[in-house]
Length: 319
Image (spheres, rainbow, N blue to C red):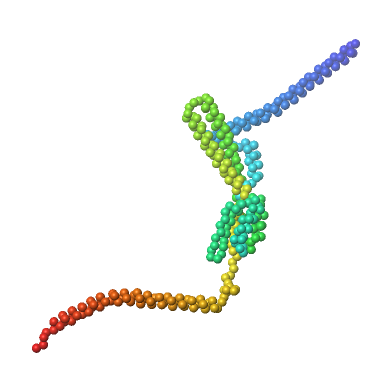
């Protein structure tokens, strides 16, 4: 009997120890899980306080706190996608400038591009053309290869690039800050409207909100402009004719009789002109000169007669 009592008592003690151990382990697990759940909340609260501080300082015009690790990671991801503006200037010598210009403008459609400008002019007997093409950046190399195949010779080719990745990332950062500032200003405006009825306070916040929205629109416009420039490359095509030596005698155009007839025609025109001049002088100039000369002759004769009579009166009579 005593042995059974000890066995039962020992069994009870072991059972109690096992229950206590399980309870302690369960308590540790519950503490660990509660800490794991509370950690993201604390992190979220810290992130919210950081964003609020950044927005508040930015709206006051003060220094903005250093970027959070998440922002740095986002900026680094954007920098990996480089935005490059490509501009190509190519001068091509071709046999027929007008035909090559038409072929070039028709060629760009096969590369999903378009013609943004064209100019064709003549200098003497030579024709020149300038064509500005916009083509997707991924099709630039294929377009240049097609243009080279259509040229007799490439006189000049230059490719310039401009990396605007950093500018685009800066614009993204400014845009996020301004949008956060806009939300804060909207909350402030709502609180002022509900709790205060001072018109000057509402107008002050509204002016700040208008300025922030204007900056947001400017940044979005600049981003769209950069996206367009990087998505489409610009190709400036200059078409020039191949230089050919002038011909001394063109085939089928030289004829000695034509030269003789041309010379005789020139001589006849000269004689006709001389005859017309003589006739004009005889019929127009001479009568006018005669009419003008008659009074002059009369006056001269009268003067001479008067001088003679005066001279005779002054001579003394001979004895």
